[in-house]
Length: 193
Image 1 (cartoon, rainbow, N blue to C red):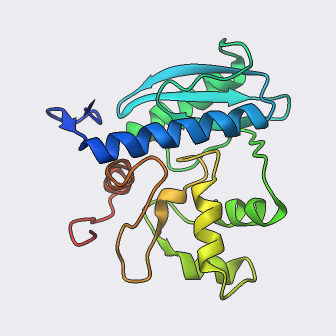
Image 2: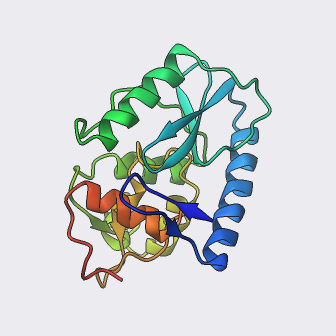
């Protein structure tokens, strides 16, 4: 599979990475279905397509790729606004998002996702630091699991969370996308593996 990421020639994903992305898309579809979003639409972005879903309260899911959802595939003012803000982010013109969000998750997941929103553009935090922020100093693994279930990647910046050793570690959308997002924000990832 080819992923251009909006920069230069296509990057070809190793078959294991392609399988991981397919599994991510299946999990995302399951989350989007469970979240009872009312509509979704797929938008072209510099790093590929993003599926953006909304409910009555706000954006409830963002997924890498063309991810189907049970609700009708139709844009709304809210999904269009989210897409515009994401395009501005990819163009380097936006550092934070001001769209209503409606993530669905457990109390702990919601707490972690709220903490992720406090990580400034161009900075990173470790899983242990996020665990401290949410009052579970030994819960860094639980933070990692909550990060993996984040239904709003990029907007709720789980890509800004790294391992204690400074490594990129996992990302539901794939480490190549995580690296791309961190590079976009001016973070030197050359020493992160």
